Image: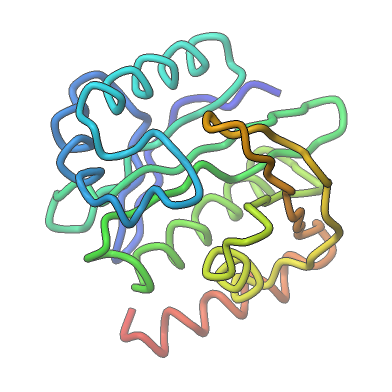
Length: 195
C-alpha cells in the first residue's frame, strides 16, 4: 500500500503533506522544550531541519507520509504522520504527533485523528490503525484512549533513547469493525467542542 500525498481538511485543522517550505513554521512550532520530554526532534532549529530532511526522505520511499499540521488560520501547529505502512496486512500506524502548547488538548488534534483514521479505513482499506507511545507518557496514553483506541500491550525495552535509557512502548489499536463506533465518538467530541 502506497499512501498518496493528500491534503486532509476539516473545520479546525488542515493536514498537508510535509514539504521543505514548511520548515520555518515547523521550527517555530517546535520551539517549546516541554513538547520534547518523551520524543524528538527537540526545539533546536537545526535538529528540526534534520528531522524534516529525514521525514521527506521516508516520504519519497513510501515508508511514511508525514504531514504538517495547520490550524484553520494557517499557522503551523505541529506535525503527524502515517508510518509503519503495511499494505500486505492492511495496517498503518498514526504517530510522531506533536503540537505546540497552544494547540494541545484542543479540537485540532481530535479532528486530525478523525481525518487520518477516516482516510485509513475508508479510502486506504485498512483493517487496523495502530498507535504507540512511551510507557511513562501518561498524557499521550490518555489522549490515545480518548480517541477510542484499545490498549493492547507493552513492548519492553522497545527503543533506546539517545541518552542510553530504555523506552517501553505501549501499543494501542482501532480495528475496522470498531471504526464506526470510534468515528461516531470522535464526531460527538467535535460537536461538543463547537465544531
